Every structure is written in structure tokens, then in C-alpha cells.
Length: 168
Image (tube, rainbow, N blue to C red; front, top):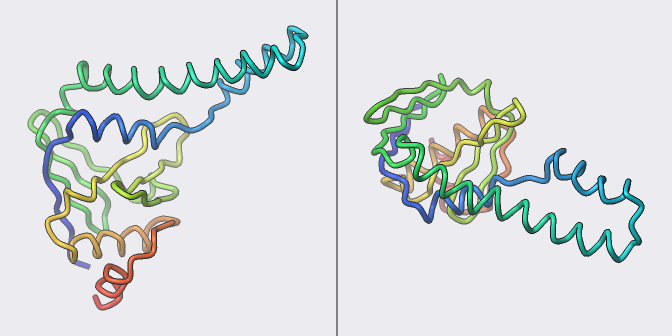
């Protein structure tokens, strides 16, 4: 299958939205909330502080995480060219290059603005593809074909893209 090439720069808004999408309830969150149970507080206290703890934890992981990633990681702000092929995903930026084989990804899913590739190893960042980075609908359809072929894909129904990808 012919490879797909995307290029562009992330903006701060897209980075923040991608971090919110990638946040998952983690083991640390369960331990933190479980600590309230171990103290022996009343149920209403546990619910109140548990809900506040979850809100605080999510806001720190997403909002503060996006600010730190934007200011500290120059790679996030660089112009990148990404090539998707049967071998994997290759990304070349102004100061780096990376090659990731398909075997690193367990699942892929689609949101309204992003394609999200989830890695096998826990604790690593997911890989995001902005839909607006594709130069044509046929490139996006080929990308969806790669996802179906190489990952456990959970994609939104799109009759046009599905027809384009089945025709190749």
C-alpha cells in the first residue's frame, strides 16, 4: 500500500485537547482515593474529597501537563513531516527523527479531531494524528486502512472514507 505523508505544527489548543483525550484513570488515582477509605472517613467525606481529588488530578494532568509540554518540549512546537507505511510511522522534525514500528501499538481509535494510537507499554504517551494534517480525503482513507491492518482499530463510521479505503 502507498505510504501516507502528513506535515505541520501543533498549536497549543490541539496539544491541550490531545492530553485531555489521552488521560485515563490510572492506578495512582485509585490508590489516592483508596487512601481516603483507609482513613475511615464517613461516606459523605469520602465522596466530597474523592470528587475534589479526581477533579484536581485530572486538571493537573491535562491543563498543567499541556502548559509544561508546550514550554519545555521544543519538539512539540517544531514543524514535522510524518510518513506512515507498512513498516511503521516515521517522523522527522527540525531537531529529531523517530521511527516507530506498528508492533509498538496495541489499539487505535478515532475522535472527532484526532486519530489516537495507543502503545502496548503502559505509561507511555499515545501517538496523535490531527485530522486536519491530512492533505486529502484519500490520504486519510489510506491512513485508516493502515490502522485497520496493523492495530485493533475502533474508528467512527464515515461512509466516504470507508468507500475510499475499500476501493484501494
